[in-house]
Amino acid sequence: MPEPLSASSVPKISPLFRLQWEEAQNCHVLLYPEGMVKLSGSAGEILKRVDGQNSITGIVDELKQQFPGVPLEADVLKFLEVAHDNGWIRIL
Amino acid sequence: MTTAGSASSSPAPGKPLWLLAELTYRCPLQCPYCSNPLDFARHKTELDTADWIRVLREARKMGAAQLGFSGGEPLLRPDLEELIAEARQLGYYTNLITSGVGMDEARIKAFKTAGLDHIQVSFQASDEALNNYLGGTDSFRHKYEMARLVKKYEYPMVLNIVIHRQNIDQMEDILRMTVDLEADYVELASTQYYGWSKLNEAALLPTREQLQRAEAIAHDYQARMKGRMKIIYVVPDYYENRPKACMNGWGAIFLTIAPDGSALPCHAARQLPGLEFPNVREHSVDWIWNDSSAFRKYRGDEWMKEPCRSCPDKHKDFGGCRCQAFMLTGDACNADPVCDKSPHHAALVAQVEAMTSRPLPSPGEKPLVFRNTRNSKALTAES
Ligand code: SF4
Ligand code: SF4
Image (cartoon, rainbow over all chains, first blue to last red; front, side):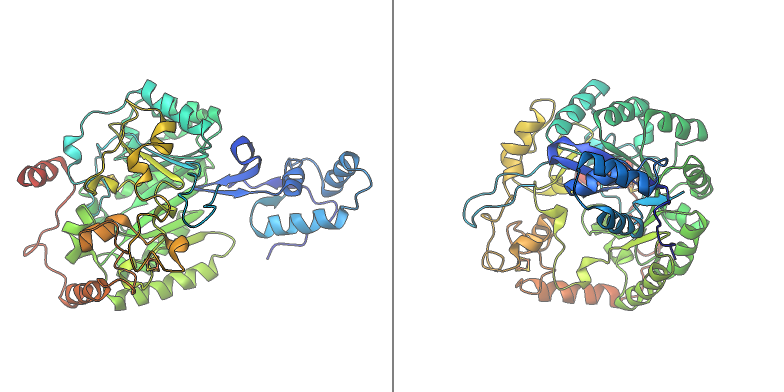
């Protein structure tokens, strides 16, 4: 069972996936063997900050600077939990 | 992707998201279910490196994101490293689809440097004797070693095993092997019966009982390995009542370029009569995808006949597989007879029943027809 994520967890993109901006789709995508997940705008904004160094708190702080006044803490955590369950990210 | 606006207008084509580059028809193996065309020996010319690079660039510009290097055996191309590097630099997710024969550690390393994303290794069976018999080559140990190295170099690894009457009873063993090799994904593929596998159908099509046993084992492993290894089991559609959404629709997302440069909406489409497949040596990928008559022929739903034409599911499965419809009914515009709404469905069921109720023919009475140059030439000289 994967452990629950906490604010201090440091996520990184799983080696089974590759994140990239896809011009033709006009969105970020996750590529994996013979498949592709298209990401929503907010999912892309979160995942592009997942670099194996930034903690979840760090990611939230960056997003707050970019989108001031938007309450996003809970949503970020919720999305990262889904991403973790899907195997898109790992926790270091 | 764009979808059809109104039901009667022909839809604007989507993007060729998936590009399959069949680099060569040459192969050291001889699998009797190979999906290469029966007459592959007649298509000897191969695109050169510059042609392939042009194709990769044009398709990428049109939105292709997934690229499969396959064949035949793509490792036989000495320019594979160069093509991988170009593809990766263009932004493709690069998949190498290989038998593992022709691979060694130095090459696995070189592919990594070139930017290869994923390697898929095929096995013919989980025991050495059967694997080597079916592949017509002593390849088992080498494959095993290569699969270990694929993981050592931290590639995501897919193991692909084509499942049929001769290896389906080893399902437990096969899955144990994939666990031992630490596969990330396992594809248990059933053969589609055309080309080589059609010739060998009586020796390959599993019985319903075999299938049920194997499916139970596969489901058990799926549950047990959840989160660690993903098992994809595609059952033979001859046992279904609704067809597969073959290729996600004709000319919808898949583009195959055959070794000689012929562009195909599906790697098996070469067998369909009355289609002239455009060649990348003469046309741009853009024209081929958007304008060529071969790619427009079964795109959308205007070509459909009854029962598909008025069926509510026609945008779900697109009437199934055109090749299967042609082979089993003589008309590629008919519904795939796997569908129980097809007037040909009962005949298919009876045929499958008759074939699988006979004992497996011994190699002496009906030898497997292996996929090799000699057989290809002999078979296509007759017709
Ligand atoms: S199916 Fe077998 S014979 Fe055909 S290309 Fe693949 S490895 Fe070669
Ligand atoms: S009738 Fe045609 S479209 Fe409808 S389910 Fe059968 S094959 Fe698919």
